[in-house]
Figure (tube, rainbow, N blue to C red):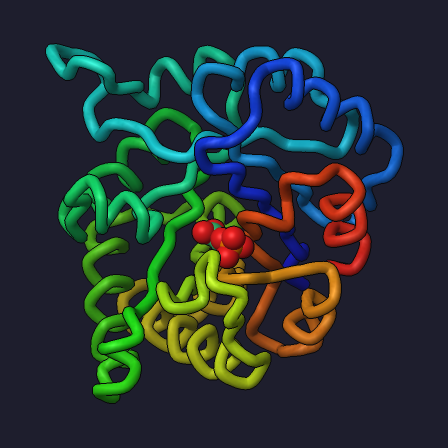
Length: 248
Ligand code: PGA
């Protein structure tokens, strides 16, 4: 019922030429039954959208919560829409940690993204300390509730939640499939509480954190995990193709 999604998060990697080479390399190799997305650095988005092969969707990694104004160095939802971007990652833990992105800002960004026809991929997840202190559920409850406060989801395909435990990101220590399932199922329960059963049943929830070609299938088997948000392993075209084809 929920279409699987495999979203690559390139973070601060790839020049324009490297990104175009990637697109050429994945062309004709992506499955139609999966939403295959790459979230690229803002400066190359336009080139990627223009040259995107069939079946590859393009996303940004962040956006400002206002449409325009005196915010030096920032990029607005209007600009992303203008270059033809479809998705935007909101509230990645690296943004929360290094750039003080609060739950409040995440909420504002989600609303603005939807207002301008962009589909937010909303990241939530606990730190190692929080997990060890048995606070995972409380953290997820706060993050998801605040993120979706006052958000009107008219099309459930337009909002994606990514469960990304911070201790698993870029560490090679992926959460095992049961841990991921438990958290994603818990998140679905919160969505039901703050939105509706329909939204909870239909919204896609991804797992992210050291997802690789050799473990993606473990997650896809779990009933509440609808795909992956993949950093490091999404940088190589061959691996990205394999990840997408295993995300069915
Ligand atoms: P990783 O990153 O796959 O390199 O762990 C995931 C992410 O930050 O989205």
